[in-house]
Length: 390
Image (tube, rainbow, N blue to C red; front, side, top):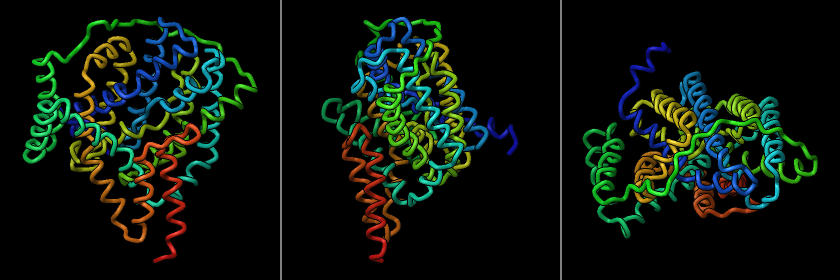
């Protein structure tokens, strides 16, 4: 495919949806990173540097992988991993935490090189992968429309604008909804930047400390949680959208980048799930082969967030939660519809897919691992038991 095709495929809609993807990712989990970094003893002056390294790492990997494979490949930080570290192992030192990040990434690198993870992912039926994606996205849809109770006019007007543009100019439905939502928030005085400081930080090298007890007791759970709650759903989402997942290659590159950036604060770069789904809907482009452009756009937003980490965080944190929830729900509506349709399309796997969907949507976290993983497990077990029924 010619290089010039990227610029032909680029449009205002792809740029805005790329921004929305990053906004959803940052808004939903930056607070967890701030809390976790503080818990393990990261200096407040360095938290901005950690966000910067994460932005640069995610930006480089998202842009490079999406352009090379012409697929909307989004990367993200491991929110479940850092939450696990802060919740269950709060007395871990910063140096030990860096050692844990490198150790866990080395294990992921081994999984990528040996192809073990790819072989496991190949056993997941398409309907189960689609059901898991639908279960993940259901919460975003429910959160969006729950805003009708407390922010009726904001939610109602944004929904109306979305539907009108979805009917007549579908490629501009999200950008129009965002603009109208921002205008309403300005008039209502809901954009709040008071009490928020812009952080400018220079990355500092932190020498990793490898303690065998900590690596086994914390590093292995961190590895399992990241693989089960981030990488597995991320690969399954690519499969559900009809894209070749290239599991081993993605795992190798994201692990290598993490090993390099971990001592500077880029604690975990892995395969994204939710933000990737934002870049795969019909609103992005009617041709699935051209949706990679939105991921590339998101990658550049990541880079900006990395270079100007404190400034970008300052801007994102000023948006009201209601606007972000409504926008996220509407941006993911098309992907949710498609995934739910694919999940129940095959009558032979329908019961198993619904079980996967319900477990995933339940939000049940067992052993510190997200419901998305357990949804896959439950769906596959149900599929194996019920398949002889037909």
